[in-house]
Length: 255
View 1 (cartoon, helix red, strand yellow):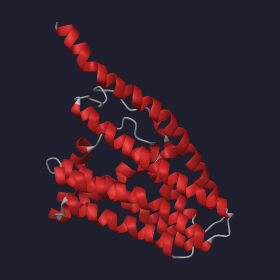
View 2 (tube, one colour; view 1 turned 180 degrees about the vertical axis):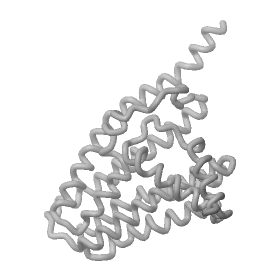
View 3 (cartoon, helix red, strand yellow; view 1 turned 90 degrees about the vertical axis):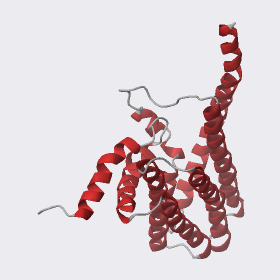
View 4 (cartoon, helix red, strand yellow; view 1 turned 30 degrees about the vertical axis):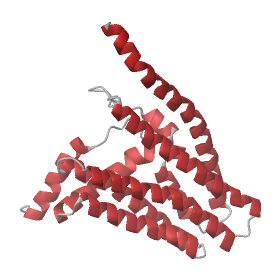
């Protein structure tokens, strides 16, 4: 069968997208091996449809916040868990697709990056609040358990802000974090940080209507995120301290 124009546009985009990927350094396993490949196909589809990265961001937000609203407003059930988990996972894949599409079409814009971060911050700020509301309205768990989504919210916000601020400060100091040519990101490290992967959290919501399994998995992820943040804060502070001393070192070498 002869390829039509639509196939040519889609397949051509797929061929070009590997060069538009972010560095895999530090990426958790789900994001690296599942979400980015899924985002690649969604980005190629969006490219073929003539969509802009901001339009893909808007569709991503539609799926994500629909899932979050359902958590808060509808009594959990096994079927509902599948709907919520699928909506969150698709929103996350589209969140990867918008960046890949931006790089495919010649690089993103400042306004696009701002919009993407605003949507991400709204997602982080509302997801665990939705779980809190669901527990309060529909669950017979001990009221003390309401502290779990509250704590998860705090940890998630601090982690997100720490990652974003760290990236911005490294950019100011022109720190290159890309992997050396010919070097592959560590698969073992990707697996080690899997518990803090947002994609894994999306999958846990597939169990939303299966209690107490959902609450157990959710609490385990919360504990893992606490441990990660405690270690990450020490590491990030040391990296920022190294940036403080870098100008002094350069000035000394040039004197």
